[in-house]
Image 1: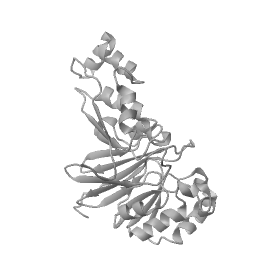
Image 2: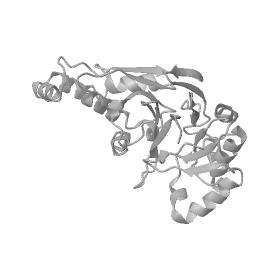
Image 3: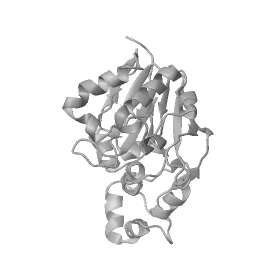
Image 4: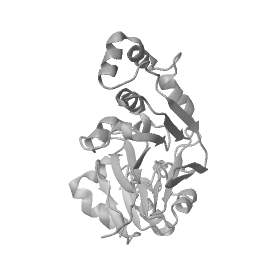
Length: 294
């Protein structure tokens, strides 16, 4: 037994923009000493959080790697569900990410122009909604959702009581979208979430010496190398080479392309990864709690 309180990583979304029965989009929860941090909020994240035993009301901090829809499409549902279920009163939600995180968030809830303002305005003002909220333990008058968005850049992003989050550039589809990867450092260990990226020096340097690297793995090497895919994405081999060069303890393949999840490719994908990576290797699945490397 150990008295270490290691961070707990739960994979909420482990897929791509292509919906499959068992995976769709990206989202991860990292629990540090009971404080839950959400990284990305892809399709159906709110529902999948509950399936994983995590209430949206437990999360006060969100980090976006970038703003492709498979990483942010469920954010309106998350904001409104968290706000609606928070009783007796709401808490502020802090949101961090590369541009356009601030305008994206304000575009959801802004009273004058937000696409979902009609929802919270009706719930705040209509008597039927007020009595429902009061019956659940809410205190009137009800306030609008309190959300504080921040556009961030590489470097130190935020510090909590038991954690620190730093960001580095993730080379994906610039200049059309900015993308970041994040490193979460705690007293007990470190985790890197790459988001979508090709292998690059900024990712390797961010991940150097980390305990856990959660890296995009979209396809096999032969489908990526030497094609335009290599400008924006990582293959099995690219993720494995990054993990080896960075000297991490455990590699978790996430954002796994649908073809690689087929049963007949489980052996070949393992063989490809092992050409460069000899450490602990985990193929991510949705609702998986990632074991801490020992």
